[in-house]
Amino acid sequence: MSRYISPVLYILLMLVGCAAFISIAGVRIGLFEPLIGFSLLKQSVCAALILSTLAALSIFVCRKECNVSSQRFFGLVLVVSLVYSLMWIVFYAQRINLPNIHDITTDTKMPPEFINVNFLRKSNENGLVYDPKWAAIQIANYPNVKPVMTKKSAQMAYQKALALVVERGWQLDATYPEVGLIEATARTPIFGFRDDVVLRVMTEGDKVRVDMRSCSRVGKGDFGMNAKRIISFMDDLNSRLNGMPFDQMRFLN
Image (tube, rainbow, N blue to C red; front, side, top):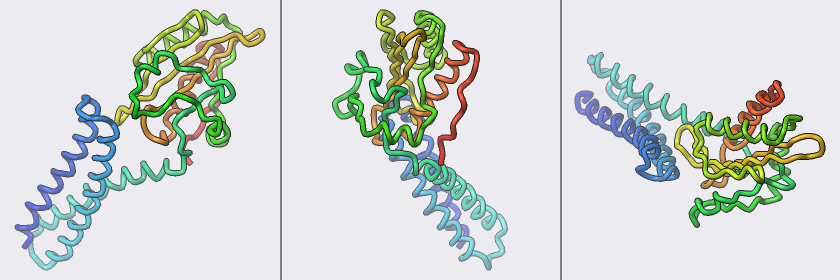
């Protein structure tokens, strides 16, 4: 019986692998939107769980056969499919308790406003009006999302922030040096979800304050990516302006 089961499991394993590859590669090359790729990946994880079940059943059903190579193959399919599915399940489980918000800012009272990005977003994507109810949620979950304060000039702070945006490889959408604004679009590492970023440099008393806002185009939640991006960026910017890093935070509960 194992000689009939082996080709079926092999084909199913290849299909799961192809689905996983297409779900990510298709998004990265612009074949389809990130949400479609994410949905395809979830389906591949479900298929991998089914495949691992079938492989385990095959080992049990064919246990009396003296075909060592088939048993090893069944075991290989079981391990590969199970590791693949568990990897993504753990990835999601680590982030499931994060707040269901997608707009993070260092200034929750007067968030930096987008100008050019308003014309880039589609009608079916998230709006850019900040919801005040998110402020308390953000503060409770991401307390290290803070602005950078410096005694350097506003012009220097603006240039340092702009240079860092370019270094990060973000798409520069617009610069407004006269009002201290920088707009850019960043993409998440795996699926390339687009998150829009705005930086604001302004004078506050005898210091210069740099604020940042990062907002996802799609999805109700962002799995902590916007907060992670802001803290990482502001940590680097603070080091370049003030020579000292921010305290780092843990994003996963």
